[in-house]
Image (cartoon, rainbow, N blue to C red; front, side, top):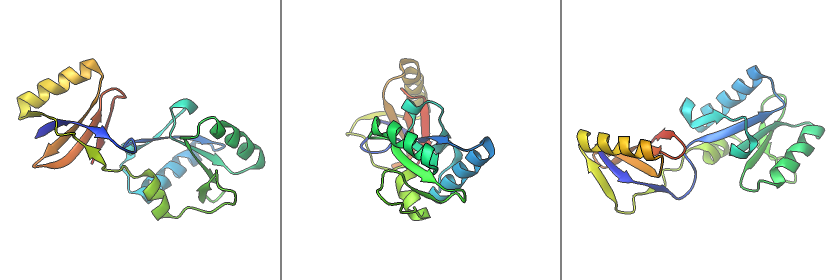
Amino acid sequence: MEMHDARRRKGTGMTRVLVVGSDNREEQVLLGRLRKAAGLPPEALQRCVDLDQCDLLLVRDTPALRSAALHMASKRPSMRLWMHDDDGAVHDGRAATPVFLDDQQIQSALAPRVDVTTDGLYLASGAKQVTRLLRQRLQERKGRALLTLQGQPQLLIDFEHDQAVPL
């Protein structure tokens, strides 16, 4: 096992989703459908309650909620906005006309991009060195690390946001 300093060029590895206009059961069904479509493990798609911390706003497509969602999203251009109908079909909420997203498009949007660069910074090898460095980074709560096994990326850790994403 080796540990490298890592930086992601795109994506975060975990998508935080705020679902609006659905009860808890329907929210879980929607999140489960998105996880399944994207082929994600449960921890890679998380429910979010703070709009400013979310990556994706998923809103029931009604006139009132659509208007409110467009207003919220206009102040957050980097956040994705998706709408869903009563059957759970999802479409891009920013598009002029609804074009429903198929599983491939959902996967492309949500699947973590293994687009990690280590910038050539090798940090540790072996259990003792990796453990010592992990403890240090956890206490500092700074940076990211990529754990590799036999040269293959296994785990991306974001110490600042207290997240880990299996690759």
